[in-house]
Amino acid sequence: MRPASDPPISVVLPAYNCQRYIAEAIESALHQTHAPFEVIVVDDGSTDRTLEIARGFPTVRCVSQVNAGAGAARNRGAALSQGALLAFLDADDRWPLYKLSRQLEALQQQPDLDMVFGCVQQLHAGTEWEEAMVKPEGDTSRLMRGFVPGTMLVRREAFFRVGELKTEWKVGEFIDWHARATDMGLRSVCLPDLLLWRRIHTTNQGIVQRASVSDYAKVIKASLDRRRARGRNGS
Image 1: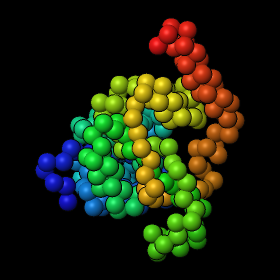
Image 2: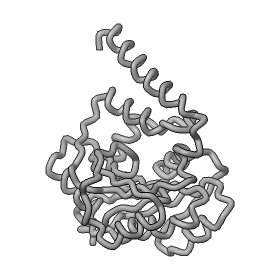
Image 3: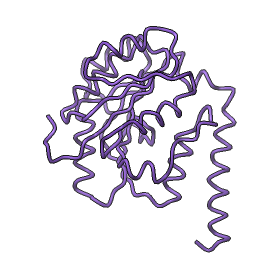
């Protein structure tokens, strides 16, 4: 349930050819102990049944676009959102049911925060994933601090203050956004809680786009250039 006094949360779910996984992702967003105000699926030009499956959830808002990448899909969903807070979930991942409630509690306890992150557990698709879902809070030995879209809850105003994700990067677009947020002085905290299960499979974009790994170096260079420029300007 979502108390009427709490700020509404918009969940943006970019999706591309994820017919095997998207229903599980949507269900994990809809069934949060703190219910989101809205769930927006942005289908990024899928050629399988991804959009059809998403449309099978009557409370989910579905939009589609020509394939332009996950960054563009997240931007589209953020622009359409109406909540005061934004959360992002990839179509092949899953949230624990308490994800939004624990992050909202952190924001309420520390009103000066702009965004809240948490920990990730990476699991291979298939047996490893299925076994972990039987006891979803059982094994916490493989948690990693996760500064990734799927663990973030951010104030909508803060997201747009930083600016949209840059769509010229095939990979690393969120690393770039987070670096810009940090450079601007946005305040964040990373909770020790498990907030995201990330599914590892052969069609993960980080695997598919290996040829674009040089984007990571470009993202880091862009951040360093901004810091040097600020140093020269005395700011």
